[in-house]
Image (cartoon, rainbow, N blue to C red; front, side):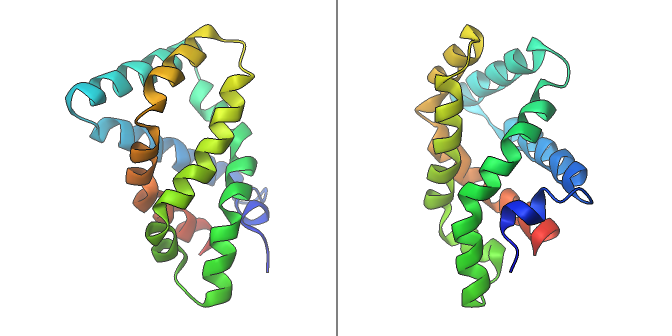
Length: 146
């Protein structure tokens, strides 16, 4: 059985996966409301404003690591005969922790003060926000890696 990394980064589907990930991020940010939503939207706009295509480039760079981090959950679902999406949603905390471990490491090594500062401001609510994104993420993974 192929790993999630092999499946999502396969040259025949990688571009579509990246586009869908960018759409997922845009939708999640757009759905945020309240004071924390304003902060998230402002931070996202600031990061997008660094340079055109920054988010797409970041998604492209992070996709292999994110897929590798989520692969244990993917394999559990596949070997257990469970729908991947349902298994991811049932384990949204584990999925969020796996993804955030990647971004935490990346931000530590970033040379951009804007990225570090924005991330640090939003990190406290990040797990809750990533968990909220798991249903869309689950649909994306089912679409491309079923």
